[in-house]
Image 1 (cartoon, one colour):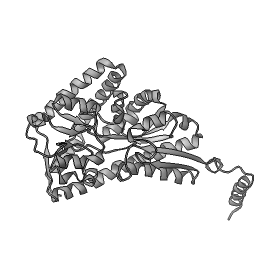
Image 2 (image 1 turned 60 degrees about the horizontal axis):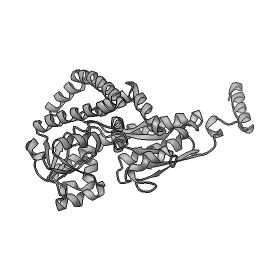
Image 3 (image 1 turned 135 degrees about the vertical axis):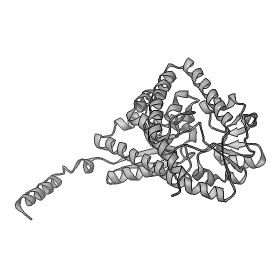
Image 4 (image 1 turned 90 degrees about the vertical axis):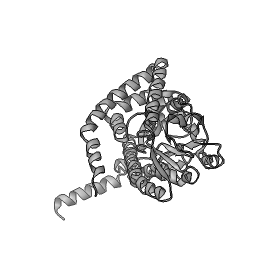
Length: 360
């Protein structure tokens, strides 16, 4: 070892001996609580929270730990916004559109009918101004947001009977999310049923429900819907890409040292990328298994898609008339989407169409 190295090592030893350790080692221990809107069985979505917590613990040398709590452990699934807002927990893992009962603007943080795909949502949020707009809105609830990942374009759900045209939708009893999508489906004659996903299988089996929409092949297969509703339709035009979010208490975040804030930001990014990649990996595997087990995978009839688009645009217009913030964010998102669709025509859309036509 040369003289310069000896001096360097002696210097570090002297700093440690003096008790002035590197920034992370000098920080006091931090313990946060995270409440999720999902059960632990959803390894994709709940797994994002686990990835976040483990990454943060590793980066901080065990100084910063986050305890994860599944839906119902600390509070009901749809109470997590109140939990963060009131300081009961430091953060939540949730789907923002669960809270359109508070304000329909929440939907833009997750998915809206005929909205953005996963990549487009990521671009809008992180570099297109979407995150800034949403955090301006979330500030009313003492929340800052970070992506927890995206499901990608979802499936259109499970149906006990075949949907041949828009007429077959009228009077359908369907478990679905509320808000913008629920209002659009109501215009089409669908009878919305709101119930915990754990109760859906039995309701489909008994005929209390005619249909259910959830996520995609990997998650849906776990619920066993294919055993009681053989028709699986696509695409889920109400969720072209569903963004899951970490809702973080602005008070808890502001109390952190800058080093820990940077770690929280980085751990969120790791978890978000992991979730989306996991869905893209697991969904095709599950879809092949479902088809092998007899599931009939069918596209929605065009007249249903067209009617859904028309109804959705009416719902957007109604909400714009009532809320300036809704109108502002909706206009901003659609302007961004138009540019994304233009670019997609020359890039991934054309490439994907060609690759779908050849034999690998």
